[in-house]
Length: 162
Image (cartoon, rainbow, N blue to C red):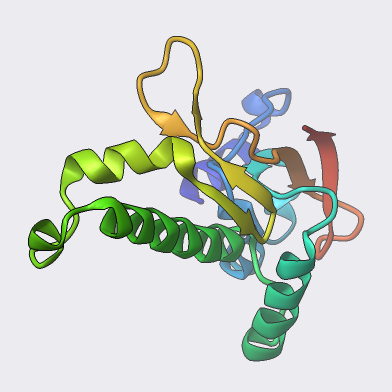
């Protein structure tokens, strides 16, 4: 936040566009501490244009509990728990009973990633390997580039979506 303030208040940097890490400007603290200086700073947000039915239910429950709209990070947290439960469940179900007593082994968990198909808050979650990358990932995760609207600081503008 100190970098944002420094750039915004240095006339020599008036033409510089700054961005922020994924999600940071979405938090209420960003708006509170930066005010207008925090507007028009693009950042990544992993949300679809429309949440899944599960996502709508989770959003309603979180909104009631938090008293405000949840950030995309809350949906990521929910989805992470759902995926881990699926992976551990699959690994445990396919691991001999002798191994389950000490937990599922790493090899079994590694075998589970291509089998994962979980309904998440932001859509169907499945893992694949992208060419050139050696890890399993949710390659089709929804992505938005957004910023806080300078005219309506409590709203976000979607600049790009995939």
